[in-house]
Length: 210
Length: 242
Image 1 (tube, rainbow over the protein chains, first blue to last red):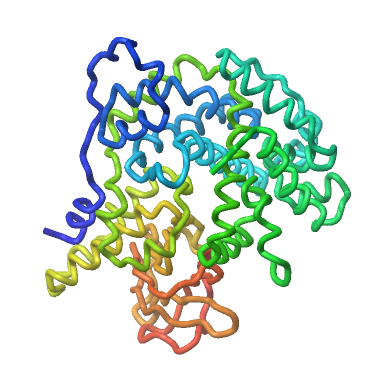
Image 2: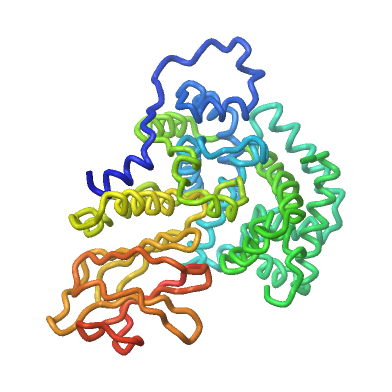
């Protein structure tokens, strides 16, 4: 056995999704994303399909919001969701919710993509996008997504202008805090503080708890 | 980030608005600051609600593609299986939300293409091989690993996968040097480059590098065949680990 085989052995945990038909919907609507991810971690293919249906729109939506380009967004969404399958085993429910874990992966991946694109070209294009960032132009398909959107929008409206712009330019615009400071023409320290107290206010408004 | 209170970066971090060098520094701080971690968790959760609010209908054909792709991909073993390497490794990685891992292809390249020398060293004792495999696997699957792919100035590419103080380095088939020259790999830290070793005259070079920091860079130079104490020749590759 070579080192390579050993490495493979360490990494491998060969579980392909079972191609069974989706189980009848009975009760599945009440299954949490956390439960689904836990099942996915055991190689449960049908659970992965259900999980896909629960998170694909928000994953695609946030990536699309950051990247704008539909084709790239689709590509990155696919990468992220396949990684959810691959790394479901690493999810630790005691440290946070499955939805947050998945959204965080999606957002970071979109950010990585936008920054690497920025390094090579289209910085101007990104700056031009600035005004689109705060527009709520996406159509939410599911009722619960629409409710979520309304609640978040209502809470965002309770922030000061500077807090809201700092938070949304960073999160939806994919800008670093330095870029946000330049765009808003405020000192770096102010932007840092507004991002933090803006998120804290948002947290309280949304009732986010540990 | 130097000189300012790391706490003030919690919001910036939760919004993924730090650049990569600052992010690495902040994460160093997070490891030693449970209060910060608690706040990061809360604010990351809050930021995640912004993702939920951005939901948009994903194209229907994406579902088929994702499910088909997942069906052909192995799931990773849970971390504990890999991390008999050391408890320390896990403790130093308190973040539960894994950095999304770069493309599986890059990983496979490192793991399957990159271990020729290690794999074929028949003098290597079985336990050493075991231990090496465990460490390599730990880096290659580390949720927070950094994967970098940079050009070698004389042609070809160098690939680095780094996590938790160690790095795997390999090159594609690079230009062959005359018999009196060799490629030497260095850890570049401040003004005192530290030699990793002479890797060979060309072809696919590889090395397992210990004791690297996120702020280090790796450099590959052309040296006399026996190697040098300090880089003297042309630096054909330089890669920042941050």
